[in-house]
Amino acid sequence: MCGIFGIFGVPHAEKYAFYGIYALQHRGHESVGIAVSDFENIKLVRKAGLVLSAVKREDLEGVSGSLAIAHVRYATAGRSGGFNAQPFLKRTIIGDVAVAHNGNLVNFKSLKEELLSQGESFDYDSDTELFLSLLGKGREVPEGIVLHPEDEEILPYVFYALSRIKGAYSVLFLLKDRLIAVRDPYGFRPLLMGRLKNAILFASESCAFDILGAELWREVKPGELVVVDRKGIRSYLFSQSQRKAMCIFEFVYFSKPESFIFNDWVYGIRKRMGEVLALEDDVPADVVVPVPDSGIVPAIGYAQKRGIPLELGLIRNHYVGRSFIEPTQELRDIKVLMKLNPNPYVLKDKRVVVTDDSLVRGTTSKKIVSMLRRAGAKEVHMRIASPPVISPCYYGIDTPTKEELIATKFSVEEIAKFIGVDSLKYLSLEGLRGCVEDYKQFCDACFSNEYPLEFKPEVERIREHS
Ligand code: SF4
Image 1: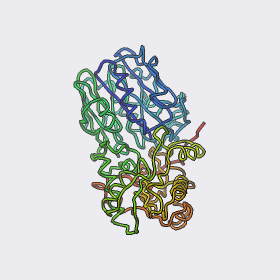
Image 2: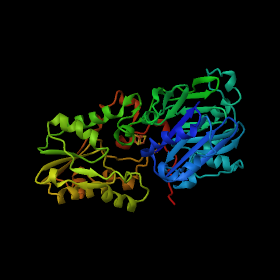
Image 3: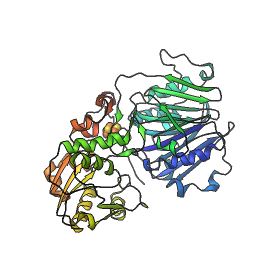
Image 4: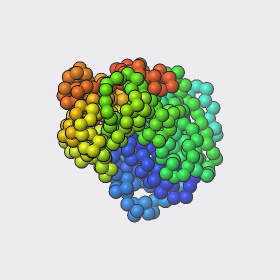
């Protein structure tokens, strides 16, 4: 999971990129980077840590330009920390190119081996470098595409690189005089376009436009490549796969509720998940308590549908990051205790329905339940606004390996016992699918084990944390 942001056509683009990527901080906590061009040179800032604390004012002095891309990261492939902070920058056959990527490439290993055998060297150990390493290895113009004269030199190299890559990618390329945005033919990850006066913006989620006062324009379509330069905006549909595979987990957990992605509002879909969960449930209860933050919106839908009051029985400390994306179990454990506090005023002697967005390992839920009981809850019924996670993700979300997924080893009753609740219920897969416009255009493999056919993973996920 990562966040990407790009902007073309504004003085001090690096500062817009700073705020734009800050608005996407929830998509990655490990590192941040900004690449900026003044039409002559590309300059780079890459840091480990959170945007606000890692990037200092002086880091952006002397790196001013009119076009920029930015990235926040947590690792799904390659080492974590600052070493693999994006954007990556490389000298290529089409000049210096910086790249920022959200996704995961399923043929990373075989492509890297092929390139190594040809004498190519790699500066990083993340799959994203392939986008740069493949530039110059061949030229291709997809059938039916007529290139604008401005693009004849550069795009055939880009299209060749894309033709070799398989997997999930929403990606931004920064050249010294242009910005190129691409979304894979299946559209796994979101990528939006915005406008701010004469400037064009790209972002993983629309919330990045709000902070800058920019307007949401449209989505980059699955299989679309968009070029922005001084001559204007040009769009090429390089692949028109009928089957789309937009990641339904973006609606469940990752995207912010105020964002617009995949042609829909996250808030609306997430609330519907709670409503459908309520329709599938009849447990007697006095109060609905959400696990903040991502359990809140489904809790509203659930509580409204069932006519049970919603109360804040768990209070979040906002100065700690999200626990799900911390790289080690120890850090996750500490963070759960740091970030949530029970509210006895709401909980004492109550039959509590506690809602969360998903249940992955079960360790966080177990701690939350014991917190609720210590605060006096009489009964605790956990309701999960998504189905059991039964399969790992190969497309860019850091769900754990199959062995770590609690639902692969235990029944619902056993999980309920493990986390210490009186009852446990998940949203059904059919219920989840009914929440989106056309579920066949979505990937829900981590809930259904039905991986999009053409994306059979060639290797187990590569993930080493330093
Ligand atoms: S497997 Fe799950 S997390 Fe991964 S892309 Fe599909 S729906 Fe999203």
